Length: 502
Image 1: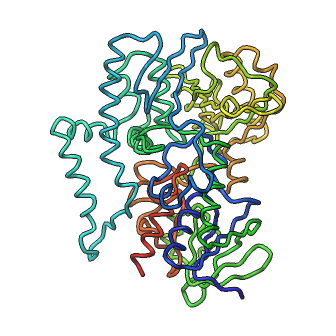
Image 2 (image 1 turned 180 degrees about the vertical axis):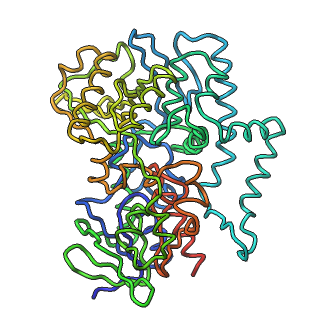
Image 3 (image 1 turned 45 degrees about the horizontal axis):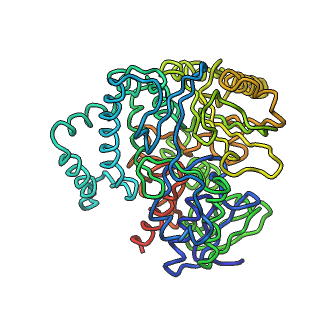
């Protein structure tokens, strides 16, 4: 049976980040990927907002082909009448469009406050969550340092952070702003990728986590790699191979092998067995625990908690091939385009999804990659994240068709004639995302990013420090702290925790 020091399950961003870190310390590493190519969920995303600078720099991604087509995308909040609002710079540093002076001033104040708060939380992304238990030394030291940093903002900001941290995005925006386009775009961002609407309790904290990311050194900036997000995953794979790591694609792991209550390797679907003293799972924790390890190797309480981990996906991914460039009533096609209407429209899009129904007017985040990198045949590719979409409708085929029709109707209302340009259309519902990418419930964070599933509660209490419940098993997916996005943070953090464990 072939033997390696470390086997990593999954060649997504976190698996590749962990592989590079471990190999750089001399470990022999094999990465097993079920798909035909490495990159994992990077291909599901269509822009970058939180690539970990430790990962980008240590892996030398620029030397392995990562270039930015645009490292600081502008966002345009679309209006059906063409009266758009354009947000330039990270997190809408500058506003262009017909908007009141009062809203400009209020947004400048709120934006600065949110970015200060996000900066306080950002160090959490690069640490192993403290273990809240007796007999573990001083687990709160790192959190205490962050608390001190928060306190140093000043009494007013410290009180405000405490006030809004567990509140909802709708009330925060409604208290400060009046313009519905601005509030709609911000409410859409606050709930993007989550199973919650703007009025849902605790919807501000995940938004601050999102704002704590960066692109090319700019906090809050959104970036588009040349060649799309799949190119970022490919650059990571090249960096890993250059470090001496072996990547095997079309190699789906069927189970983790355990002997004498310790991990000893993995078995592939075809029956092949590979031995390793350490197995790192960069696939969803629920999949790892319940499918790859299995209930018979876990205590009953952990099995119950794993089964009840929240993994509801609420976003669909739309891909359109167009024979020409659509006109969104004068909006720059290179921008990130948002169809949200208002904070109320975002909430109304969430309401029916709670009951397994398709919203009449889903919100859309639109990217036209070919506006940045034209195709030789003159055709264009439009991708959109549609919020919200049901993850468990009673009729999957009917819901998929209804969701596609609703998205096309939204696009037609904002870019008249786009329907006549469509040559090909594909929409991936949450259950399609689950089937294609192995994410339970189609939840792209591999576990909902909610206050009860964050930090030392992520993925589950007792296994939040990346070390699995079976000796030799480690967890390193987006379902672990700090969460999703194409960041590599969880994988890098897990590798550091392995080094510390010896």
